Length: 455
Image 1 (cartoon, one colour):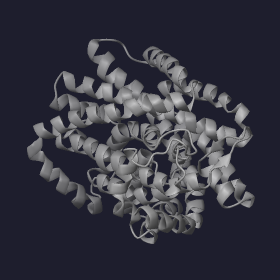
Image 2: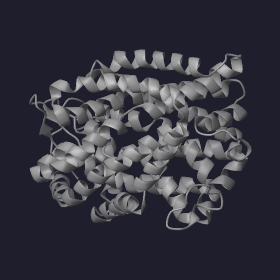
Image 3: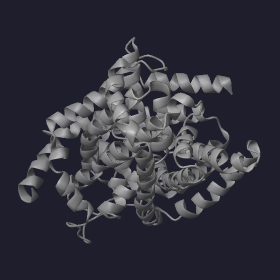
Image 4: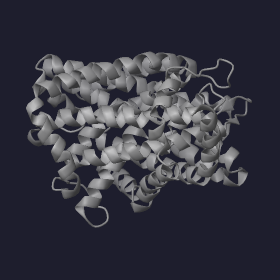
């Protein structure tokens, strides 16, 4: 097991090198500047679109703007916001949060471009149904000569879309919060039992297809965000006196890197801290990874720019709001310095210290909602990747592979799971960012026409 752990860790570190950071963050900064900060100039219009102000039931697509964003958010607003942020602070201290924010701001621009393209260049699967996603805007936008990039993305997506990290952290949370305090022995048996229960729940929903997934998560996502928001605001209120100190520390430690304990990049601790923030940010909001394009590409709209504007709200909600709330909870309670816990257990400790008895259970409800909704959405992404590779009539086979992986996630070590998904997310980012940068001028041409009419 140690050999596998080391191999997967080395793989993740190799792909998350300087070239990918330049492509992901450098490319995102270029897109923001090239668009003249368009995502931020039209936030009001984005919200109008989300409310359904411009919806037309006769437009092509399967789901509404709101359902598309909810489906995308259900995969991003999840364990990355709770366990991923805790990992970032454990390794990098408060300064890692600043680089999470930078990742989100840049990610808003990236999401605008990638998800506009997902609707601009929708393709058809082997059954003749309209489909969206990175693989389709590569083949439809760049042409068949670039299909190798689409295949590369789809193969990486088969692993990147697995729910193993969410399952792993939910299992850990149930053990840590529910079973152990009540004297129930945890280990292989409890992990296996939790895995079986999650497998049954997920099977019922994912085998029902996108419509059932989007209906489920469009109700679950808003509710879980509100519950988590209220819980965290209560904790921040209890520890209000500590808040200014830690908000300041996020900025000062972002460049000092005194608390960074990971592998350095660029030959220095600051580089390692920047990489940590970007890596956890990408894991959290998935900007530039390309997963969300498969949900937004199914949106019912004839105006690609509209979907780009809706999609760009994702990193703002996911990272600037939810991740920041988690980070401040961990910081103001002091558990990041006083506890040896990691991942979701660290966040649970923060909830328990501030809201005795009930705090950890509130978190467990949020974690369960976050994780289970993510389980539903990722299966859709994986089936689309398999459909592109071997044909739509075979896509259902991915669901069986996906369901089996739930058991693997429940019974495997956290470090192996996290590094595996990190590594395949990095591989997915390569074709996503390359194709997006090449096609960016076409997006801006479409944007000028759209805002001339609706702006």
